[in-house]
Amino acid sequence: MGVTELKRKDKKNKARANNKTAKIKQLLRRPDIKNVDVDAIKASFAEKKGQTTEA
Image 1 (cartoon, rainbow, N blue to C red):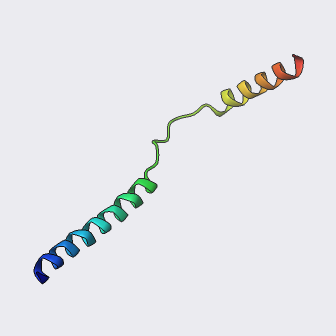
Image 2: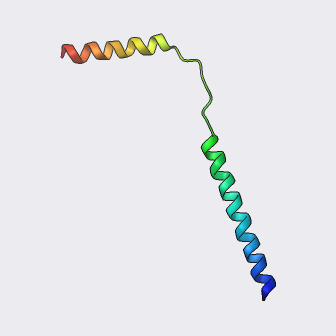
Image 3: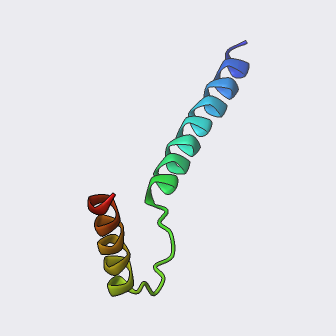
């Protein structure tokens, strides 16, 4: 009986370790950095700001 408990415990420990590494990898994932036109974004914000004050 002791052998089956150790196998079960081993399986549980390995699953716990795999879950931790998977969680860490998920947290470390980042989206690809793309070329972004910052000036165009700023201009679009300025347009939106101008529209809300006029209305």
